[in-house]
Every structure is written in C-alpha cells, then in structure tokens.
Length: 363
Image (cartoon, rainbow, N blue to C red):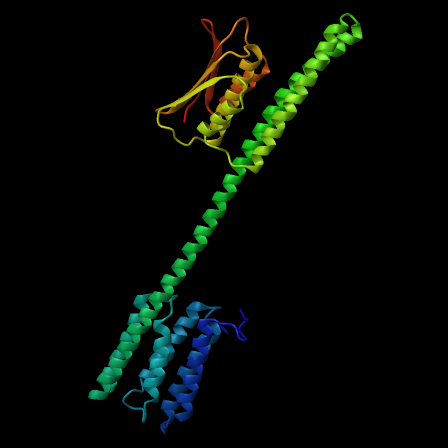
C-alpha cells in the first residue's frame, strides 16, 4: 500500500476549530457595514476576548472560559442596534465554540446561551429577534450534542487506558507468580539434592580418612553419584517448566503414570476444578516421589493412586504393597515442606501390608 502524501490529521481538532473561528471572525469584521463607533468598540472587545481565549485555553482554562463567555455576550448587546448581521454572526461563532467545550459544565453553557437568547429577544424587535433567538438555540443544542460526543470519547479513551493498565498489572502479577513458583521448585530440588549429597560426601570423607571401611566409603561415593544424577535430572525438569505452561493436575498425574515403569491404577473422583499453581506442583511432586519410592523399594508391585476432589480440599493417595521398611529419606520430607507452603499436609506410613502416602491441600 502506498503511503499517503499528507497525514490523515494535519492538526488537532481543537486547533482547527480555533483557526476557523478566528478566520470567520476576521471575515465578519472585514465585511461589516457599521458606522457607529461604540458598536465597533464592542466588536473589538469581543474579538480581543476571543483571541485571549485562543491563547489561554490550555494554559489557564478558567480564564479562557470567562473570556469566551464574554466574547459571545458582548456582541449580543448590539443586537437590534447594529446596522447589519455582523453581531449575530459573532454571537453564533463564539456561542458554538462555547457549547462544545467539554471542560465547561453543561449548566454554565446553558446559562450563557440563555443570556444570549434573552438579549436577542429583548433587543431585537419583531420577527428578527425570534429568528436570532432560534438560531442561537439551535446552535446551542447542536454544540451540546457535539460536546456529549467528545465527553464520551474521552471517557472511552480513559477506560481503554485503565483496561490496558489493568491487563499489564495482571500480566506482571502472573509473571511474578510464575517466577516465584519456578524459584521454589529449583530451591527445593537443589536443597534436597545438595543437602543429601553433602551428607554422603562427608560420610565418605570420614571413612576414607580413618581407612576403617573402604568398601562402605566406595558405596557412599556411588550413592553420592546417584544423588547428583537424580538432582541434576530434577533440576532440569524444574528449569523446563519455564518453557511450558503448567498442565492441569489430572493431566500431570496421568503423564507420571504413563512414564512409570510399573503398573499404576490411577483414578480421579469428584468434580475436578482448577487449583493454584503451588498446590498443583506440590501434589505432582508428591506423586512423583511416591512412585519413585515404590519403584525402588517394591519393584514390579502394582500401585494404586487416587485423586479425590472434595469441598474445600483435594486429596492424593498413593498405595502399594511393600515388604520391609519403605523409603524414608529426604524425598518425603521435602514433599512435606513443599506441601506446607501450599497450605497442605503429608502423611506416610504402613497400613497393614500396604505403604500409603497421602497428601491433602485445601483449595
């Protein structure tokens, strides 16, 4: 598309109106056929008031409003005495501008317009007074209609700006919430993994320093290596959350079930509803830790996972048959701390021959 030679708007609307009004007033005075000096004095005062309005409108609006009201009332005083129609033309030009001013109250505009109409009826005798008053009234109504349009446009613009500001604040709050979630996720992963890794390395160092049990020290080092690998994988998963949206809780749990190497019977009951990000991440992390423990301590044993939506709470239960002591390391402790931050609780232990992990958040 070709770029237009001239812009669509050469000047603001108010400037165009001021220039046109000034040119019309100048043309009216240039063509006036008036022989009475005092009438020319009033015309000059009215014109000076108009020019003062043009100059002061944006700097001193109150002064400009008074000047504009004066510029329309002064020529109205010459109606019935002026030798031609210059007086009514000056009144119409200045009154029309006054009626469209959004910065002036409707009551003030009506009062000035009513004063002009009264002067026209009082000074102009016969049909001429009625015609002049009718022209003023029509112009006053048209100006007020235009003023209402401008007021609505300004209100719509202000509402649009407020909406944009609200949307920007909402997006900023959402971004901060997401950053907080990711920061907590990475912190939990690193604190868990590095804390456990530090304990294992201290133990290995002590054993090697005393040279009392080299085999145990080597086993501790191998365990440390596994902890480092697991921590790195979890950290990568946490960082990957920056690149994707947080799925719904049910979708995230179904993804865990699909990725688990064993048999998992997953069931969701109750009316599913959106949850806060912190609650979703905490419950998914609990399910991941419980499935990992089940795979380590009871490989090949079927696992039952149930998600229950109730009024005011969501409960996740992971149950598997286990022999001996199930995992009680840092994983479930970290999950409990994370759930506490999301206003939730974690319980774990044996129920008969089953190892049961249950997490609940109020949401």
